[in-house]
Image (tube, rainbow, N blue to C red; front, side, top):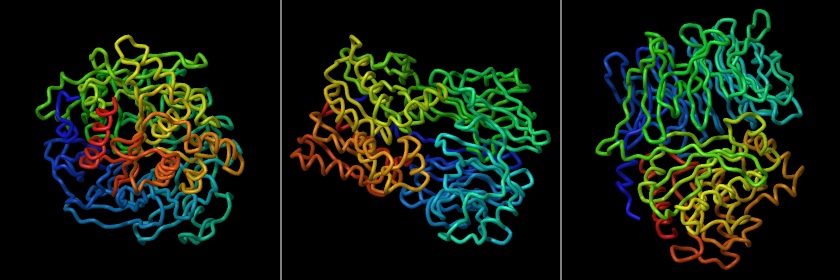
Length: 617
């Protein structure tokens, strides 16, 4: 079908990523692609003057957060190679000079920056994901933790001499606890900090905070003075709270019964959380535990900035906030909570597009195979009858939200109805709903997705014979599952960077991903061989009778390219022909990993998807 507007022009509308305020709050740094390539920019918040400081020497994929050197003269960023996510950490001065700070083997993730410029980061350099510090003064790296389970989040104390982190020492794989430790004590315990060296066991010089129950998930978001901003889901829903280190007590914030994640301390000393509601998100500002008010912005996805690296507050006490809706592109605002005013820092650029042409999403619910209520977002194309697609989100612990999705807008304008369900395992509806997928990958949640297709096909304006399923990552896995386990429900499917062989995935995964698979599947392949086999789509490839399109990046570290190739080979072995006229189509994307924010890479992928959808539906 012919779209209502050119796909490439829509994808080339400039996007910004990971904005973070400078230490003095006068400048914001962010990735931006107005040149057609992701570059690093800084912008004066008072004058609006914008300067590009990079010149093709930052990653094309801008998914990882930025930070500032404390003097405000340099921006810290992640550097990988062609989407492989094996990040080093570099910094770039405001005049464009780039310096590598951390060059570890494996994946490195910047967590925080101390007042004197030290970096707190997690890394797989010693096999499992653990905590390290880059000491700027001596240009050296110290290992801080040595756990068998991954360290997932970490923040510096305001003085930079202590740090707080999240890991699990229990036998309950879902458990997360918060620990506080002196950096000097940790260095002494884990020394020597040599890449690849044998590390000591879990006897860490750290104090576990007495929060929550065994099996619950506790995390830390911010540290100010003797107060730690934490979150915990012991009650069944995440909530934010302040842990008072002086007397080891916790003050909890919010009404309870809704999902609220802790974000940061507000400039006025209050607490900011992020509340999820009906596929939307909105920050909430608390001045006391029971006095919370939502940011007064249009219903959609509203989010404070900083990515865990602070950088949300301007010098005049405003909060940098991103805001978007299902039919409105993302903006960056400096939001004044006392007045409800938001000054535009980066506007939504529509070029020649009329914003009124974009379609809003309807929040809907349906009943799954076992009576469980599932929610989602429905984009009605208005075409009668309408071909349709079920778009399955990744994760699985993620959520389809009211974000602006240019590809969905293109599909809807081209006459396709799109439905994005939040199957069990999705976040946003409490711990029980999220954990329902544990030890059941490829089970009941696939029933939720199958029922999404049935529900969509039952709309009297949808052509039930032209309903497809597609998605990326876990959405790609789900597409494989649907076409092998429920083939009668679909006209076709598109699997993007999906998983097909769970045992092979475990063998090839990074160590912290292995831990996640053990949590999700109830153990290792040795512990649960039947489950790993039964829930692997490649084992059921012989059941397929509908065409499939397979798209995968060759440098994907999360779902390696072998996952696509082994499924392709299984289809070949059963005699299926490959190509535009065959039973399946197969595309490998070079110089790309697990998706990308790069304009040309997105266009390349979307061309494949649109061409396939138009021909097959």
